[in-house]
Length: 542
Image 1: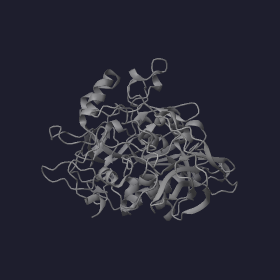
Image 2: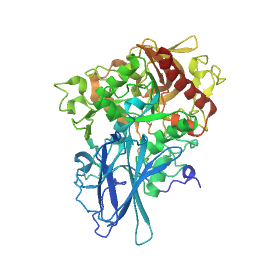
Image 3: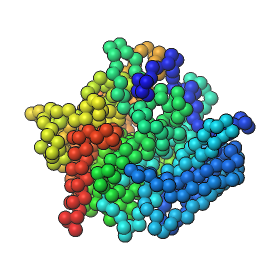
């Protein structure tokens, strides 16, 4: 059977403490090893420090520049691995392990995403293998036209290695599973977020829900039964960015890599690029990251956002090793002094910077479809309303067509939208949520803010609407009236707008990389239209 048709085993659950996070075993006989790097990105000429701990005395460390044609750039056998202690709160404080190896990056290194593999063959014959990553950035004098921005803040938010993340993991109460407000970069990454087998189920639900049926979560089922991180499909290279990178390379696009952390600490990180691309799941951003993107667009850049669920403000520590999100301004220790930096939804009145003002769309307008019982029988596609827009050139789309419906499922998992209305058969923004004045809504799909419980509390729901209702109630007057009035209903959208000298295309869904990977012809043509327009526009202006 394929992973997406594996029967649901009786008693399968993922709530409370039934699914512990990865961390070193306390069993002295256990054989294991782990690795993390001191940073997420480097320039040629810098050195990468690999922090290693484990009970396997000898391991092999391999560095693979991943992509359409993967290439091993370094490999070393490490003959002495220290079993360093791991703090109980490693998820927030970091592991503090010693440096086990250092790699000086050659001055002529080819930029790209580098997968770090730590492996060993155990006495039983079993192969132990865990991964980490880093990117080698391009020097500015040789930058290509396109920069792919890896959503490292969202990766951090979902990475539960060490015991917790922004969603779960704390406490000993088997009935509750509270989250940590702080997560660290100085720890390994959950298994499956960086590498996993092909064909693994996604959070987007491709399964048909029968009448009266219970929700299915194929990505959870597969991970639980195969020993992978519960959050493997929520964020990371393996699920999102890699799929886009392979498609782009095959289509002949030269791409450089940056991380959200680069945008945060270097306002000029996007200098020299014509087009910035974000794909997959980019839920979490800092104020400074948004500043970098806004400035890039204002001065003439093209932003191609092929992603969904733009929702939360986070903060980074001065050295970038910690990220925090308290969800509610009342819980954030800096909110009283600097309310605009409160780590909560961008739409909060005290923050005063609606998400749509940067991206055109926002997660608060969505956020879920074809996930569990969130619009479980929707088409999985976007209904087209403005087929003559430049983004649809050559697609043969008509008014009312479905773009990316089953089996592609482009409009699935998490989607973004704005407040809108219909006039004479066309959708228009109401502009009450900070949407740009030039925003055009090209396509729409249904979405809801959580799963309706029709099962009397007897079924573990992946994202129950009660959680969103509790958050909305807790935020209270912090949220604009339109959010309270909207209840649990939302939408997903594809939209474009111009600001300053630049332009933004927002695909409004996490599933663009998957749709590219299955070579949906209309989706592929749209993305080529966007990339070609944005790279030509800057070149013509120059």
